[in-house]
Image (tube, rainbow, N blue to C red; front, side, top):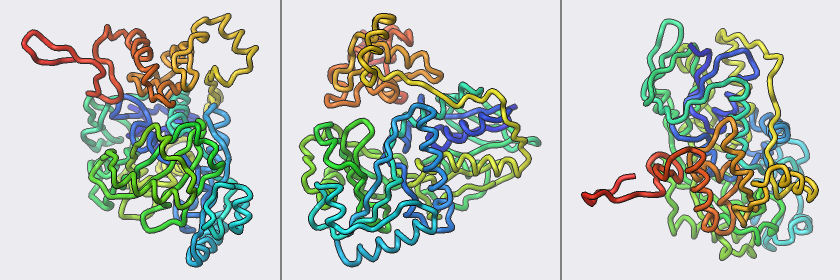
Length: 478
């Protein structure tokens, strides 16, 4: 029997697994997909928020600022791309300027450091491409950007290194209360544990109702984005927000840690995990983003995508014991990516209060190193290629990813099972051609390393087959 079963391995579940793996516990993480970070975590704004937006006194406010501090430490220790670039909230009207004052006071109450209001002229001296219509901005220098899927993967991998058991493709189908804990039914058998953490994201309401009566309702909200080529990557250096409204923080323009530019999201209610993009939604994003930064060249788009936020009717994170030994970590919408490590700390405290003994391991590992060939000095590149010739063979030209790096990811604690799984680990396919050049070679390496024999190659999740063949009867199968 496990001490703790975590349902879901997005950023919340991964952070919980990482934090709990520092203690002498038996931990199991159940994930329905074939990889970690396959839900909201892989499709969001990639921003670590400063903390001025949440209402003081809420869990969001309390855990945002703490999470931002922890994220900076963790990204450094676990070799995750991270940049503290700061952010602006732009005011276009007198009413917006009043909103900036509200956000300033709110941020100060939440403990956000360095907040200041700048005039439009002062803001444009720092961001020359900011619209001349901007009258003032709230400057939050502690805001940062990161690679969200690499952050999640780093936390999950480190948890596995520290003894946590990750079970992929184990979708939860039911929960059964036992005398000393819970029996969790999955698509691949049952798992038993003393305590359960519900970090199921968009599935959190369904999982909650397997253990307790309904007392919150999930209200999924889809946000659509443009990802622009690196030719637009220097258009702005900070995250440029507009004043928030009832549907969220609004459309933003932001650099990415990979050197691109991103614009979005809109906000629209959807049913379930509907990540389709629409002409109307993307047109709204383009027009609204241009209000902040008119010179953005949307013709340089290399991908559009959508993510779905797991908002609820509560308006705050739902982190509590919902049934004996069963804890919800639900409604983790923005600033969930930022707050995740603080959510994990908070959840550990609840588990301790419920009787779980938290004894620290003397040999806890909190470090990780990832080879990024293109970032190495010339002498180190030469030495690496001399020792391992695969690093001298470029597979992804756009992102300068080598065969050696791709082979490395199959030796990681959580190896990929799909083409997109490789992309998330090493960046092959993230660039201008979106895998058009490197995709076949990556697929060849994936097929070889997984021993698939040319069959069952996946683009992403189950059923996303790359290849099919026709049988004699005219029916296709993979």
